Image 1: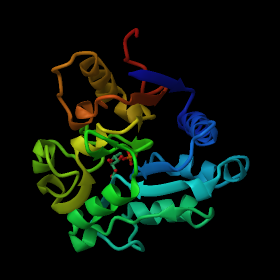
Image 2 (image 1 turned 180 degrees about the vertical axis):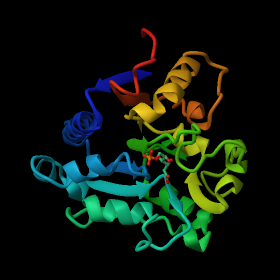
Image 3 (image 1 turned 60 degrees about the vertical axis):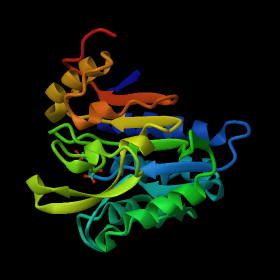
Image 4 (image 1 turned 90 degrees about the vertical axis):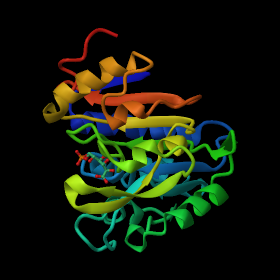
Length: 239
Ligand code: 6PG
């Protein structure tokens, strides 16, 4: 597990944009499968990617965008992760993107799409080049919320998950798909997540400790990077 600590949320977004561009431009990179996170944190990163130098530095024709989770709303709804990403990035660069049609409830269809489009497999599971995630204050990630059924899923890669604490259903990647990725970046700046970040980072140093859904994100063969800022990292102990 690598921890990158930026000065603030803006600096985290800038550092992540730079590393993402480097990943896309490395020799022999070929096609780059990228799953976007929702929520508010990644918005600045997406906006940066849509501006120079990243807009022109990344070969968007080699990038294929997916979503790690989605709310059960149409794209024009203010809660739509696709809508946020479309306004910030997808409407500004020529990139292929696959919206998660969560309102249809057809998780199997999205799983089939992922299996078809993400060429590289690890143990038969599509291995994304990069999956972006955030973390809620309750320690959820994607739409893997505490106490919900999707946490126990070991076979399917994409499911509809009932989230009673939010009176909603969401579509989400499951651990088997997330943990097959070559890289997973968890973006968690902000003082409001300081305590949870410290608990999670501590738990991630121990194999069996999974107190929150985000601590179940442990790529079997890939890299795990937590992107923090000084405020959210304030209680994180020494490496
Ligand atoms: C979602 C996200 C979710 C998000 C966290 C953090 O659909 O809500 O995928 O997992 O990353 O809720 O959200 P913020 O970035 O808004 O704090």
